[in-house]
Length: 550
Image: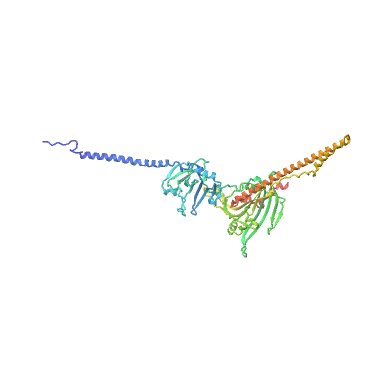
């Protein structure tokens, strides 16, 4: 019996060894192909995931859609040199915008805050830069957290937070470094910035106008302090003097030392558009006044006086400090004020001192401004001071740095208002016509009724007629005089009442002004001070050579 060999390579009951080996090779090859495909696919999946997440963040703050809902803005900046945080805040409190960082000074913030909120509404994300917290320093988006910042830290950004009236956070953004690549149009004001939403690691690149997040005090207030029209200025009194305060060693009482230079009173005629010198006084070594006249070769410096007047119409302040309480309605020191050491010290530190009758003298002279409505502004200038600037874009040019330094140096200003009726045009009252003599009209009428001529007497009739005519004329004249007198009395009364109403209105304006000025020392820049407080050399100039010959 012959044996039979299986030519298919398959033994009874299963595949042959060779077949199994081939199948294993094929399976391994397929697995490697699948693995390679998956590995090739991973970057694409990862990229799609990032893009997908970026698509979900097409705008920075999807929930911020209505600028009118913004009720507060807080900006926190970091000073690298001192490792200190500089918070700035504007908030609507009891219907009024105020600056908590400046002792709740009133803010003109409605439009400014709306502009800041609008800058973040629908702000598109250009691209995702990083998801790593380790890159936050590189892009300058480290949060200015008081518990984490330290001296020497770099890469700390600026925090911008907007809330609604209920305190809900509408936006919370950390603004980092600028990406120097060009962005926006030439007038867009926007630059490329690295930013991230506070509390999240992802860093974005966006176009942003950071000027909308200014922390400069004068960008958030009503800059025009006096709110006057330059054309309404009628009188200027400039007192160029210096005053220093000390303490008498023997008695311990405060002392005042005055060094007066000159005092000038000037008037402006708006019809002639010309200045005139009302009075000029110089002072000797003992501060005794001596009246002077302009020299033959001198004239008023009309250009500088016009500049002064125009500066008053747009008087800008760069800072404020709250005054102590104890000043009266006309901003004179009340009796209790003089005994309040804290209040007196507050004044003296800023160059002001209360003297007898509550008047206040200042260390750097004063300018008194008389208006045609009878309001007189007293601008008293105190000590020099330095104002810390807001955190804006760093100055990049020499001119910008010079302007920044100039605006940070200023002088304290104490402002008050009062009524000066001499500035008002007095009512022109017409003289009253002479009244008819008492009974003059009645006597004429009685004579007219009683004079009757006998019948048949022609001469008597003619005489009676003449007398009657004269009586009628006298009565008419007396009545006309009485009516004219009444008319003049009525017109004079109307003019006087009109003037009295004007005085009443001016008194109310003075009260309103002093209520606004009462709580604050203001600070004006040195540039403004130099414009509105002139010395003799600033008010008076030499005539041109050709004018002298004429």
